[in-house]
Length: 418
Image 1 (tube, rainbow, N blue to C red):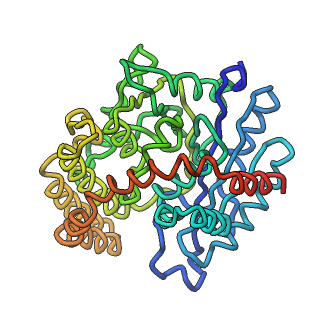
Image 2: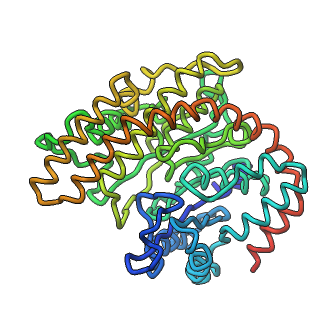
């Protein structure tokens, strides 16, 4: 069955992230965004592998949706080079795939167009800095293209299931327990051939912050018989969102990472069902893994912010209150009252372990994260925990107008032809 037979017009969005090499002069400057698996600008990275896997599906007769590759960078100085690098990769695959790139220069056009449509405030929210903002651009593009659904894949994945895109469009937009299914997530299969994450109980320095263990506890629902089920977690690199959801609910630009699980929370707050499909899987082979202290540092902002936002939503009209207990065991474990204490303990123990392993620089970074948790995190959360709800109101008002903009649509189609 093709997507046309399902009467679902779908856009496939693939963010690709680029970073500087250690030898580039500006590489030590403060980045405009931090990503887990960025590709060095001198390399091709994992994107060609993903595109080749999609080409193989085409050869087998699979109708692969139109693809938009979003170009994001860690340093502004890389924008032009990253655009060229991405385009050189896409040219090798355009003979089989309907594919276009979207970078900072394209965003400039879109923003100027929105301002002419009296959507200046909405346009001011749009950028390609950080996971949430990048994915929101994917939603805006899908809206311009009048898509019924958007599929998100990451560039470090491989799709081998011939029925993957059929499964993506099978449930979104339908009803589940009286609610519209706004989002469906699948799961990742790693290099080990399993979705279980490696977790060693002997790693004493992770006491209090055993993230992989809690994720594995949550992954147990994948083994349950029912294909569709309510889930506390979601994966941004294997996610389908319906227009009924993304026209109203955006990703939260105030969260540093974990925007996928936060989107699940937002969807449920605005009364959409967001479900796990235990038959929807992709292979996930990242070439680079971020340092643990960097991941922890972003996570402590993320969890502290999510906790405060969930507390605040109880006082908002038009929002369905969501209890943190419904997000157990992950990410709910990290949304409990003692989250900052757990973070500080694990950071301190990790600093000790790093010294024992002669990783002095890592030890210093772990200690810096403790300082952040005692000061900046609290200020950041207090400054922004209400802001998402205002952003969501602007988003819901602007998106119908975005869908009607023929000039932006023609611009995207012209880029695709080129």
